[in-house]
Length: 277
Image 1 (spheres, one colour):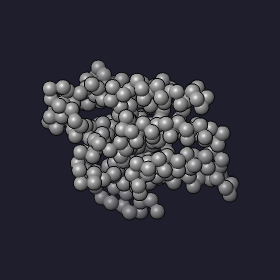
Image 2 (cartoon, helix red, strand yellow):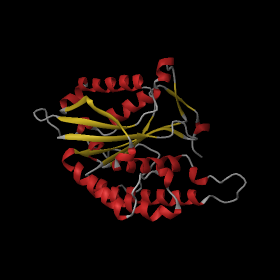
Image 3 (cartoon, one colour):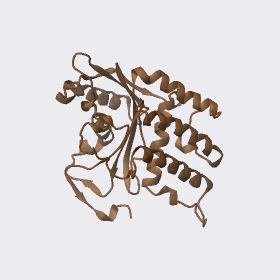
Image 4 (cartoon, helix red, strand yellow):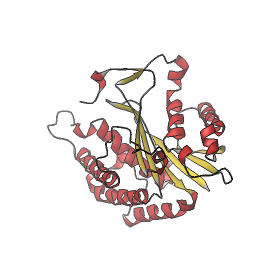
């Protein structure tokens, strides 16, 4: 069996929260059926092209809600696991070297892949190892930088916790892909975009010189609220701006079908003036 993970990233610098990463994990035994259902939903809604957060408008709102309902049906049934990671601008990392700052994008991406799905808590066993197959949305970095990143990820095979869980990464199974060709990546883009939108108060933006918000902003807020409602059907009172708790069981980092992770640097200073009001 394989764990197939699709990952995406969004705003690296936001007003209150930055460095957004999102991903969905599907077991290989479920993958074909999940993709078939999601593609079928798109076709039923006459959505023949790529769906993404930036395309949300009032005219397409009902269609996008239907796709998100289908996606969250898969999540609620634990056929798909979604993770969202971000940083809060009020927690400022300290003592970073120039090299660490230059490679921040890939370093955070590495932390997201390594930790967010709780792979070390999955029920895989040593006698039947599980391979992780990564489908990474096309990265805004050079070919050489991306190759170094993939090699760094391959080093996870030496991680004792992952080894004990029977988890292995294969650098040959780490592919950059186009979201246009992958419906699950498109769904991640929408959920991730909704979180960026709300956490950075983009729902309050008004066009220059206007007293009211634009129609597209209003449509996006309605879609965010719909997604939020679906999350809260799984976890009542879910707080999108905080790390999801484990409810007394560390293995919930794997078991939970939907989780958020607010990454706080170990060595940081806190500037409350940068916090969301």
